[in-house]
Image (tube, rainbow over all chains, first blue to last red):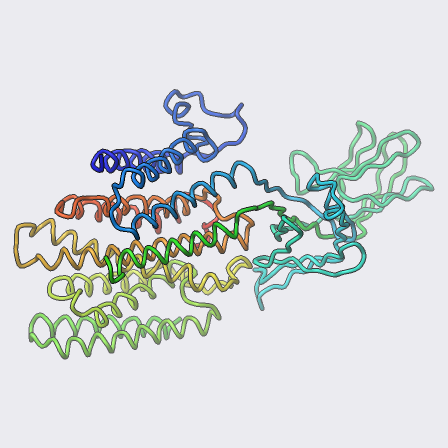
Length: 293
Length: 253
């Protein structure tokens, strides 16, 4: 039985290794419509292997093998049994985490606020918190364009100021908020005859039943356009005087604001996983160098 | 940069002299003293680099090319018994080879670049060194495995198998330490401990291949040596191949 279990393990890990190696050379896709139709790629789900059933099934089979080796006493030493139990438990927690927990990004523009409860779709009072991005700060390395750190200064419910920066997440109940990325967004002042509008890139407003907006220019997203219904005009970098359908329009760049991209992660079982990871290293050390080898 | 260059040249000369004393004059004591001197010079190179860069010397390819020779030289002195005889000569040759690579890397790879925000973490001081300890052990294991494959029937080399086993244990332990501390760091930095990034996947492959080693019969010396060779090749790909061929979250390494 022991030999069978070991050879099963060797075959299984061999398959896992080969599929993992192949998968790293395929661009991993999320949209099923773009999956490859090649029979080999399709069968092993190589272009979406990490989130595929073959991956989950193979690692689940590994857990099963570990438990079978414990049940059938293929592992004689207590430390080896302990090590394998820890590995199996860690795999179970990981599979549980990957299938249950969620993670997504939320953009917050400077001087605007979001309701955290709405973002995480959780209506309980505990998460009915307004997050106001007071400012976003980038500190650069001296004489370099490389950022040393970037930080979001948030005000929670108009009371407490908290910071989120890279490597220093914020904990809100069962969620953690991470500083993921940032970008800048321009704010334009639009003047049409006697009316003034302040529009951020992507915003729109109504002027005399006409929809006006500032948008990215599709062929070159670095450039922006002013759109009035279906008509559009390319904008200059700071100031433009336009004439659309005999309508005099002045568009001027007023300011730029940061948009902080916050990663929201719901992770349960992380403390257990951390504990299992450290326990694994400890027991591995005992298995290798302990007195009762 | 010039000071670093000169220090590496001094280290190379010292090691060449050590080889000369060991092979030609057969004076192992002087050879060891010279290796010890090379360690001091290599340490000074690393200290100079760290002082100028204001961060530890393991954030890019050039820095690792000056760190690895230091680690290997330390192994030569601290684990004198394990790395003796022919193994010692191979390791010194390898140190010289890495030093020469460090010298010949293009200037733009030697430029000091400040750390990106994600790397400003205490976890970097555990995660990265753990991998380098693992890599240095696996390299010695690779040399031992080749020696075992070539001289498999030689009874004098019986001790090699024991040393190989020890090196693989150290390598395996620190590969796991690197993976686990990397996962913890990633959790605090990106909100996820595992992103299926190519570097992560290949680090897992390194471990899975070595797991094979520990599940082999004690007496399958040939198979064990072959597994070490395969494991080392996967490590080489993880370090160089993934960095230059497969883009991912670890592209800066």
